[in-house]
Length: 140
Image (tube, rainbow, N blue to C red; front, side):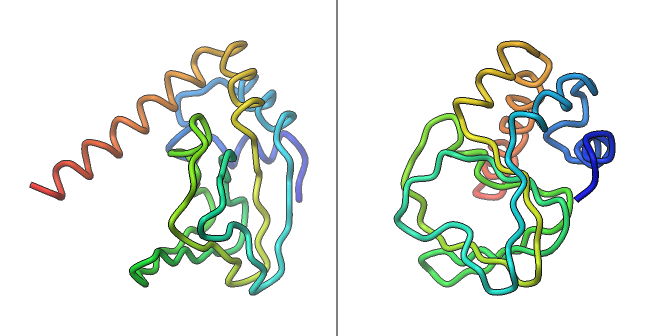
């Protein structure tokens, strides 16, 4: 994948990081691991504990839950936000639909970057709050 500057530009277009400074994103990228998956390769397996946040840099991910519902994640989307700060067993499988490159950051490393850059914590909390409100509104 590209260098840190290019990744910062990508992350600035991810809803989770829209309001986060470039220096915070640079530190986040440094703390993260970049991983490329081949088409069909498993990323996360159902019933395993997850403690990572994943950001799709390129490619396509398919998520299948225990009811058979399918969700897809493409470039500039993320997943794992519900378990990165509080690890839990996940009820779904994720696999690459095509060659896919992800940034993966552990909860411990995310906490470290948040301690240095409170704007990252604020952006993260804001996005989680928006998602909770959407789910609440959809269930009413």
